[in-house]
Length: 241
Image (cartoon, rainbow, N blue to C red):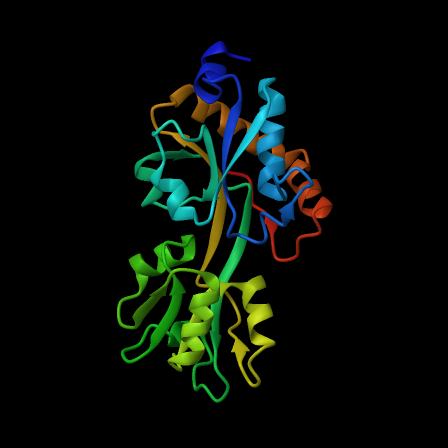
């Protein structure tokens, strides 16, 4: 292990791992000591084990708040969706896992295809600064994005204001659709959220090492074992870079 990599990823003798607590596929709970559990905490621990240092979890309620702390000596690695807006300050690996993002539409909706959503007069409920929300920010040309602070508030706003579509990760939408008689989830995806590992852009040696680690974790079956261990449905191992 290169001393330069260890110095960049564990400058305080521990690997501080920024964890997005709002992604229920990647964080499935907390253990008896209060530490987060799930696929992304397991990935962080595996990275720490390879470095030969302890892991310290730094939880964030939202991914945008985690991204805001890049380079501020708050975390050494961050496990969030890789997005161009975030890549300005974070050097990301290729994805280790990915999640389909699509739309839910209310009962009686004339919308049947994902391509039908981006039309004038269509209002889309979306969680602000989520990875799929950032994708919609860049790609929606005609519909209107109605942003909410959380997954729950986006669902509530979709209902209360009778919006035409709710954007979300397919596993969460499967839960939401059960609460709305007649509602449907559209087939396909408008994007797949790429869950990756990032570090501050200044950490060039560490970023290169993390990229190799993630590819090895996918090809060796480590990521698949974490998904199975935590009994996660709706999360798949990302393709090789």
